[in-house]
Image (cartoon, rainbow, N blue to C red; front, side):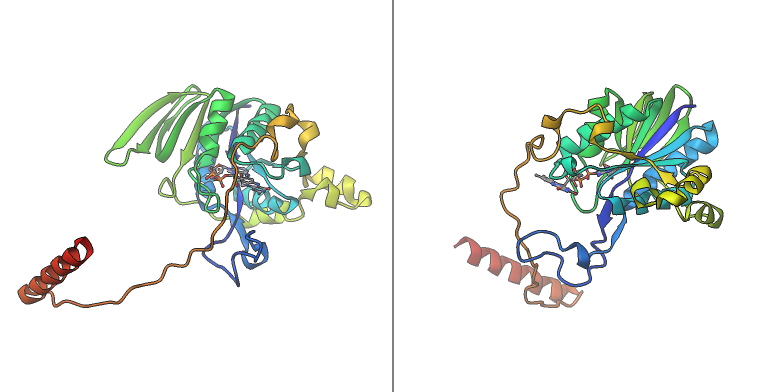
Amino acid sequence: MSKIVVLAKQVPDTANIRGKAMKEDGTVNRAALPAIFNPEDLNALETALQIKEKLGWKVVLITMGPPKAIEVIKDALYRGADEGYLVTDKKFAGSDTWATSYILAAAIRKIGGVKMVIAGRQAIDGDTAQVGPQVAERLGFNQVTYVTALDEVSQDAVVVERDGEFQTEVIRAPLPVLLTVTATANTPRYPSARNMLRYFKSDIAANIPPEKREIYDRNGWVIPVLDFAALDAKEEFIGLKGSPTKVHAIKDIAFSGGSLKMYDAHVEGVKMLVRDLLKEYVEVNS
Ligand SMILES: Cc1cc2nc3c(=O)[nH]c(=O)nc-3n(C[C@H](O)[C@H](O)[C@H](O)COP(=O)(O)OP(=O)(O)OC[C@H]3O[C@@H](n4cnc5c(N)ncnc54)[C@H](O)[C@@H]3O)c2cc1C
């Protein structure tokens, strides 16, 4: 059976900060930021689930992160994904987008039989929007970024709409293809109560007591882990060693408002606004 891989990242919920977002040493204070499913990755999952409904393909979610990131996998299983892999290893720590995409591409190759990869356009913490296109390059897949709608899909090709800034582009791409989707592409479905009951206990093997392992295996509750040893990957391309990005400095930036002046929305008010703007322009430029 053909597979669709969905790439999903667990990210700090930057809209719900509880306390100081940054620590004194300039690193992220994760305790102040609850972890959530990266929002556009939910749109990626929804796109994959719609394709599954049409073509019967298997939806496989991959997340790279610490063991806590299995929360994203469980959430995806609750929403209708068939399988989820946690990609994790201490050796992956310090990976920039280039090394991250190398590891994710190795995981996709390992899973095998993948005809389509769907990622979110951008993660709300790193914000680079680089990982999707880099994974496509590494796999040699076609790619369409900024997808706003899925029009058609068949065993050989996909037709999608793409946000071209000033126009909507309609693109037909032969498979295998990687899509990055935006928040407007669809409305993610809710987790189903049936799937929540089915997968509630799912966990990685390391967290399962040995005497319960057999029950977990029988019920399909074991979340597979892909570590460095499981991938066909070279150590020089991962972690800090494989990351060409060097962070020079991190600064806490606080925006503050200036003084506010209101103008009446009639002729006199507009005249006064123009006078003030001209005065300010002359002061700035003299
Ligand atoms: C020098 C350096 C060191 C770093 N060290 C660390 C570190 O030690 N630990 C750490 O957590 N981060 C680290 N990072 C951050 C890490 O590189 C990025 O978070 C990661 O590459 C994703 O980039 P992004 O957030 O810009 O994602 P984007 O490119 O904006 O993401 C686009 C899409 O790609 C997919 N995607 C992105 N990341 C993942 C993922 N992890 N799993 C599955 N799908 C994904 C999602 O679908 C997402 O919507 C480091 C970055 C730099 C520059």
